[in-house]
Length: 354
Ligand code: PHE
Image (cartoon, rainbow, N blue to C red; front, side, top):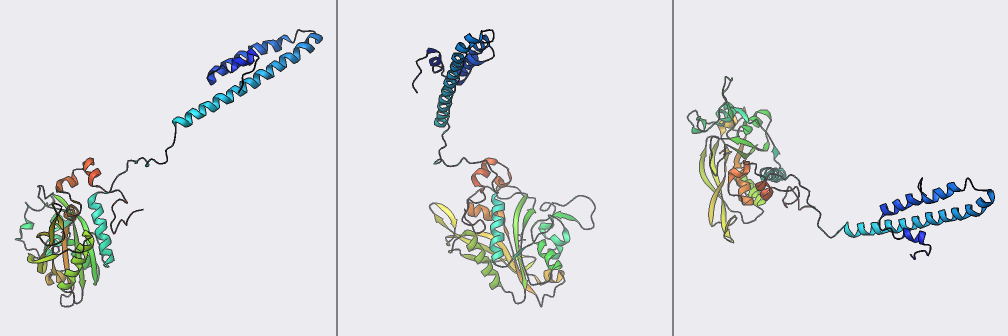
């Protein structure tokens, strides 16, 4: 824009900011501004004088108004340019991560397990964490003399109750509750919290188990082994999972087997798969006829298998954590490191992400 020759008008183009220009506008056109005063001076003039001065003053006012408007548009445009230059939106930047909560590894693994077993036709069942000793022990054929019943292993509730109340020591009482409440065939898993009076790097007083139960006709250990093999292969996402069933003892299964999974060394780390060594992952067996009878079913007609495993332990093996206590410390740094955002782990339950 070329500045006008008229020095009065040229002044406006010297304004470098909008407030400066506004001050000039007020000085000229405001209530006591220069041009306003000139307009007022028309009043006392003779008509002849006014006819000469009037058009001059009006023309000057128009010129001033136009010059101010023009300079204002220039300054506004410059201001916008400056803002656009500094407030640039870089669409190539990754979006800023909004702080969000993350899924605890235990919840993640429980979801994965529910998903795997849902595909095998298992429903999810639940039971109370405060149990009575009949469901937790007696109905499961756990004799009075069994060490699990001792005060130093189990949390008993104080006070008078019809039956002694305990914080359940395993998820197996859910077997009893389901067999008593529904008719076979039964296929269930029961994930949940369990409690034992134990505390060190690999034991916490509260931890998580998942129970499995199948009751039907003609169920054999072959079904048990296939189910566990399928579950562990899917969970660890490896085809080279090798199982070893070791004869064992649980009062509520007969025969009983402890199940070990083979591990091997990969890049200096012990991983599940292969068979360089073994680690125990679950307890299992054929449901004891006495347990079936305690639930009011005929053990000659119905058989089944059951298994129980530690959810926290499965999480540690799959995701490489080494201290169980950290699971329950509530340390946000640990959660940030090991926790999952809703879509960031490609698993069966999570899908491969969006
Ligand atoms: N309840 C057993 C435990 O806590 C595990 C188990 C469940 C064993 C079902 C056999 C069958 O150790």
